[in-house]
Image (cartoon, rainbow, N blue to C red; front, side, top):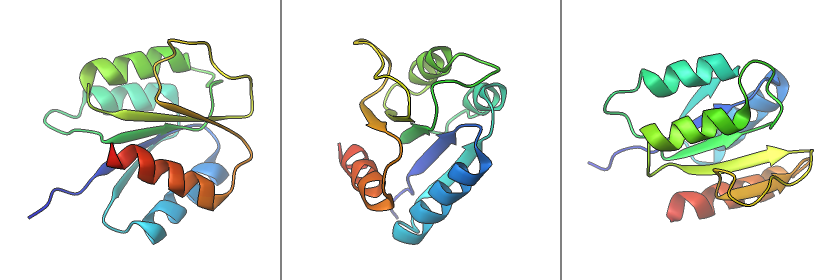
Length: 123
């Protein structure tokens, strides 16, 4: 039996996070989606996932108030080295070397977001 893929959504906008979760589950029902509504919760989930491999992390902002996004992503990649990272932000493009694989500027369509998730999950 094939292991289901797990996506970790990290952000603080409950409307956007709910929309992403519903969109992913509708298009890819075989995927598990976990949600961290703060940087602190994301760090706890990353730390408390022994034996779990996150396949993809989607960070919906670079401006979390409680923990710097760079710190979260660096920690995620240390704990889950195979994780792919997609950052969605309305702000400026992060500098070279930022711990991510792809960056999308908000607002974005459901179709483009799902296409990018599919690309990252396939690599």
